[in-house]
Image (spheres, rainbow, N blue to C red):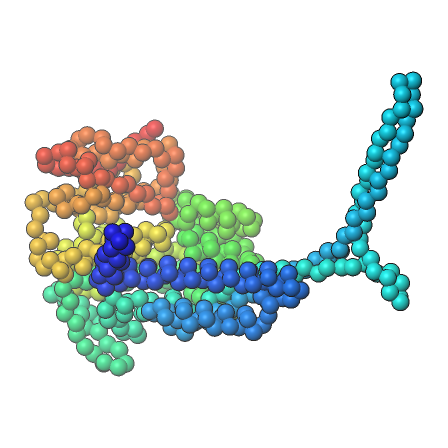
Length: 517
């Protein structure tokens, strides 16, 4: 009885927690449903085994499969947010012919006479052969047929499973789609508009700026020549090919070695286009090393560093481009021009954080990143305004974007709940940089507000080899990591633990620098 009472009490506590925590409720329901699915998948196999013994294939019967699919749809459809559910079960019906076997037994005795007397030995021989039956047509082999239906797979389609709006509504959060923010005032008043509400205002307690980034256009590059058709940004070409199913052209030249440009070099090649080369203004690539190998080297596409487009030929349509080498001052070198006939020019010349709204509300902008200057909480110089993702600084990996978004969202929620309590801090320290490091995010921190750890992301200004990346606090080196190669296209990351800062009564300076190995 005590055991039963304990189980009853545990279930009561679990139910109470499920009512308070929607995520726990969904997780428990999910586990129960998975157990039910497994039980259903096991039962048809058992029935199939019994049917095989009786010479039928009831497990693979269409009516039985349809019934099972319907039952699973009903169960899965009860999940909150799943929406309309469709289930399809497929079977593999493998059969093999097994002949009935007949065993013949032969025995006999043998007498042997020798000088010592007479001995008798007995022999017994068994042999198996297929059983046969005689009929009017002659002798036929008796054959048994074994049918073993097995489940090949189960396909479940839930229309609401990947719908972000469903998950957002589950948390009681309003979401406005097809809505444009026109401006944000310094007091965090948001002016927006959509077709249903017209122009309206919102006064939140906290704001997270996640506007992303935009591609640098041809107008910002000042490339000489006319404005013919066939000039696209790499992102535009990516949408045309991957989403709309259009080919921008067949003879392609790519200017810039950003990750999107490198990926589009491979994509265009796979779609049948001829990518003649990738030209990069800088003496190093702006993309990840793995993209250079997988997208260029593997397909034999040349990469010309310290080269740029100096002329675009053609009035109505791109007919060709002229490529020239550039010097240390990034200016074209006379006599190095090369002409490449082509019908398409893709531009992958960098991404710019989108921060028109940030500037409009008076947020301080970092001179290097083009995004807001933030502290350890990813909070800007306006209290309650946070920033994350490519609007903060351009990332190379989407994992970093997701991590920053989670951090900014969590801190914004805490600020909204705590009011002005988060504004209080004893000190704020600017992170100093040297040794070729261009920038670091965050740019300033309050050590007393760091909870467990602080992640600092940074980029170098040029390719560096055989270096150590150091973090120095109050003149003491607390972290030193070897870096065989560092490149501007790949973001560096350092994690400072809270206990490293707690060793000091007062943190007076934080320096991130490089040194030779």
